[in-house]
Length: 345
Figure 1 (cartoon, rainbow, N blue to C red):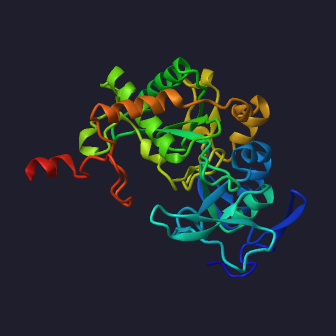
Figure 2 (figure 1 turned 120 degrees about the vertical axis):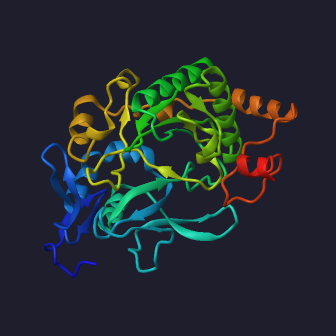
Figure 3 (figure 1 turned 180 degrees about the vertical axis):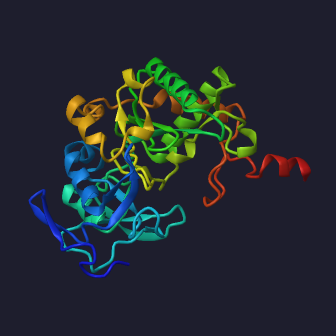
């Protein structure tokens, strides 16, 4: 850990009517950003979030977040901070979240941009966002479609899978909003109309994954077990399981190049390059072209067609897809055993 003022005296930044000090502002956080492999500091990180403030707040406001901390930059040790300590500023908004097993913790709620800057000052590289507002914890309002390429799958195949997801959503009267993950995949979000919980949304994404894997079996897979996926794009439906969170839009990833999980327009699908969307380039991109997710809250969708398909599959004897190993055995779930091991047994 850095000593007091080891990397410069604190710099104060005003946000949402508060003054947030950035301590050790010159501490290196990212060692190799852009073509010139430039170093970027904690102050650079804070100023980045100010530059995308309106856009990131549209995705975060009122939501609990899990903090991924790198106190000494991306090449230092990291940890997930599940609990906000009592020593934190009194003005921070928090709420109680629980794991699937019922373990509670005090999580940060992003009430305004000052909360994002406070987190940045803690060395947070990644706000992992819950799919509900803290005021409505039993009602999820985001369907998150995670397109996760298996090793060896090029990004062009992820683009192709994203186009198929977009078109299928359109068939169902839904509107998807895409972003890079900041790494090798693409996330597609759908704003969900009121009245659904995470169990229903997870079932909806299972139904979507099954349909698209049937349409394009050489490109897309819905198989949970890695040994069954092959070189295809996996639709990770379990990102929608209750109490799961996902890396948020406009967040800077903990990578040496400071890549950003960047929202993009659908007409950019064939040209978007996740590697060049960084802490340096994304503010200029946003200023020039606007926020591709600006109208998401104005486009809530019914997920009923997908929920109904999932229910029909259960009625036809098709079991629920496997849950993550930390979750208890769920109703309608098939035996949770690796296929090769099941054959051996």
